[in-house]
Length: 103
Image (cartoon, rainbow, N blue to C red; front, side, top):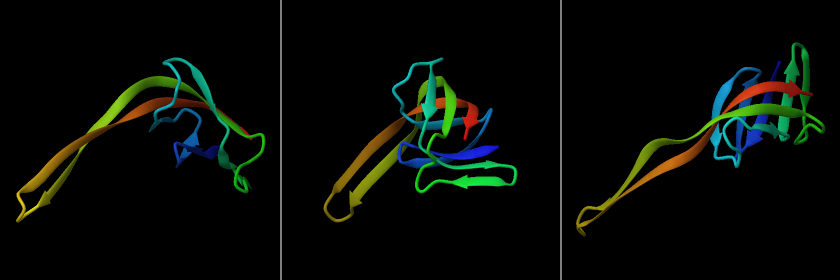
């Protein structure tokens, strides 16, 4: 059984027991969270597709940790003007472990 969940304006395909990194959620380590924006649930041959969401479907998960991603460097330069600029960015992430899927 798997589901497609939307969080942080991104979609993730999840199964029970999966660990994934999503954009920052306001939850502490060890806390349980629920994703109620479920777009698709598949159980063997039975597939439910939402238009756009499935009513009553939930995916529960535990928060494993809060962390920051790798640093991404953005470098801008104009060759004849002597202009250059370096900017770094680190995205805040939440690591969650999927417990179960309810359709």
